[in-house]
Length: 432
Image (cartoon, one colour):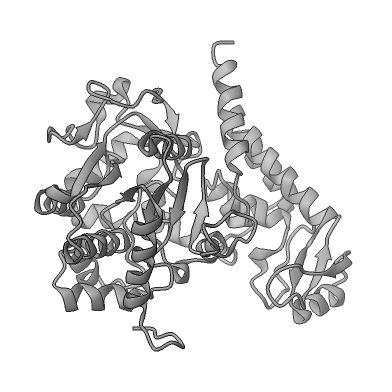
């Protein structure tokens, strides 16, 4: 395990963070997905409560996306049953809107939608801790609610107006976005603890295991004999490295690269997944082949004209979404720019790409020149670096082909306000 200068490892550091949480928050709940990180997070909290003889229950929120592996479902139910005395459980099987990146025609999909009942991937669970439309205790809930909106409003509802900690098992070494979330100095912390971030008026997101590495997860499971999702054993036998093993909604960008594993591991679920969301089989078969170097330009096209051709083939709503995001990217690169290595800047000069230097970057070591590109190049195949990181028409085309409606491939992510506003507008004009 990683060790700190004060000679403690990440486990001991996490226990110290739990000390802080239980002393400074009136209400506490854990977000549980059934994955390895949230599993260790929950086991760590239960262990802490047992050692400190804490009898008051903590909340446990599960958002069932309808399409979990059978192993994940079994593991989550096992954890509920073994630790019921410590948990106030909300296993949410509600019609929630989730991102969809496997279809050209669906930017989102809705789990547990009443109109899709005949096509549900799994039957509705019947345990007494399951929350569905028939027994929903949440006064804030509306059908078709977006996941992000549900997340925030659940926290406010659970807090009952008291200072509340939402414990989230994410680790910063899994992705740069997660590192940024933790290190974001613009968000309010509690008493200066960087691993706490104020999310709503009463709720702080807390990340007690943010500095763990993936090896630490499995060391803790082995050392303490904690239960874990046996799906990871199947992943290992399938040849995945520990860093490649992910448990997430199957149609999100983070997990679609491993979508084909459903075909092998849970073939019954796989068949229903294909019937549930159009494009699942295509992405599972060809998704990994869609990279910057793997796509050839059709004859008679530039990448700009090919991008416009692709936009014309899409449904209006999907096309408008891509156009909006591409415009945001063009404006960002034209007005602000992005820090690039000196080697890349020299290659841009060599191949006569029109750009300007806009000072130094404001993040990291603040030593990179920020490059502004006002005229979008058709492609950047000549660069020796990762050319998919820099704006080009080819990058736009690949984003469309990947069905990447949130445009993560381009380094963009919609703000929460943008996402909510867009859905409000769509809802308002849906009947027109």
